[in-house]
Structure formats: C-alpha cells, structure tokens
Amino acid sequence: MPKVPDTDWSQRWREGRTGWHHGEPMPLLMQHWPALGLPAGSRVLVPLAGKSLDMLWLAQQGFSVLGVELSPLAVKQFFAENHLVAQSQREVDGMHYSAAGIEVIQGDIFKVAARVFESCPAVYDRAAIIALPLPLRQRYAHEVYGKLPPDCRGLMITLEYPQAEMPGPPFSVDATELYRLFDAERKLELLERRDILASQPGFKEAGVNTLSTAVYRLQRGAR
Image 1 (cartoon, helix red, strand yellow):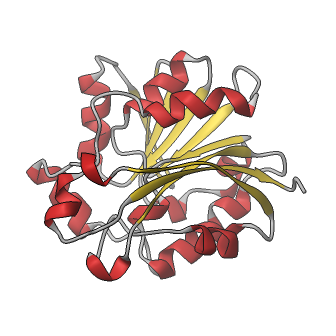
Image 2 (cartoon, rainbow, N blue to C red):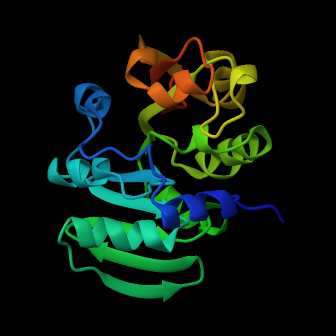
C-alpha cells in the first residue's frame, strides 16, 4: 500500500533544508482563524505538521492541537525548540508525544485510525496538500478529510504557480483541483489570494514567473 513519500523529506530535515519552515506563526492563520468561530477547546488537526509554530499559536488560543508528522527529527525539534517536555507513548499508528495541549503523532498519516480524525472538529492545512503529488492528494482528500466529523471546519492554505515551471514539491494546487477534490462534500470559500513571488527568491531562481498563496475556508456538509 502506498504511503507518504518520506525519502526526500527526511533527507531535507536531516540536512536542514527546511525553507518552508517559518520562525513565527503564519500571519494568514492569525488573520483568518478567528472568523471560523470555533468553540474553545476544539481539537484541531494539523496534518504533515513539521515543527510548525502554528501549532503553538493554536494551543495558545485555547485549542487542543493534534499534529501528524512523518519525520521523527521534526517532532523532536518542535518540542525541544519550544522548551516543551513531552510525554511519549507508542501506539499502533506511531509514537504519540504530548505537552502543553499539543499532541503530535510521529507516523504515516494514512495509518492513523479513523477514530482519531473523528475527534477533530477543526482542521488547519498549511503545507500538507501542497507537499503531496497528485495521486496522494486524491487519497489524502478521501482517507483523511473523508474521516473528519460532519461539522468539521477549518482553513487550507495553498500555492498556485505554473507547475511546468517547477516540478515541486511544494506543488501547485489551484482552485479547480480543490473543488474537484473536496467540494462534493464541503463548501469551499476563497478568503484571500495574494501574490508572493517577490518574497520567495527560491521560486524565482527556479524559473517560476508567477506565484500566489490562497486561503480557503472549508466546512463539511454546509451548503
């Protein structure tokens, strides 16, 4: 059975080639998350979480955070760099680390039990869907989002650029694809799209001529 491809990502973590990681919470998260109106204490799924400080920000807002990350190095760095002493426990889907209202499962997201996703009425997808090639994006939409509860809502942040100009990852995931993958079961609402090419020299050096980031609100079963 196919799984999240880890060879390239694991090597990037080992070599410190983690240009996607930011040393502060994502401004788009802080801007748009409050409008979701989620009750305090809601459990938020953060798929392919890396060592994102967005998890820390969500916990500081009073949410219970569940990250899933394949790289053990990323998980260890997250807790160490934020001075969190995590308790750990091995379960069938991987190692579970918990501290300060944040739980991170170090393992393959496709092996996480359905009951885990069913406990998350919220989702924050900043770098997961754009990290996966198309066949895995299709599987991800079905096997992860398909197991979230009926009232689940959240944010998805994507990148859009001419895919022929750079092979990825991160991949370009435009509105047409998102509506094809998700809109049969969820209402998708574009909240913001902005040009970010000037702030991403790596893309310019790779020959990318246009680059935008887009923020979508997702709510399952709301039409």
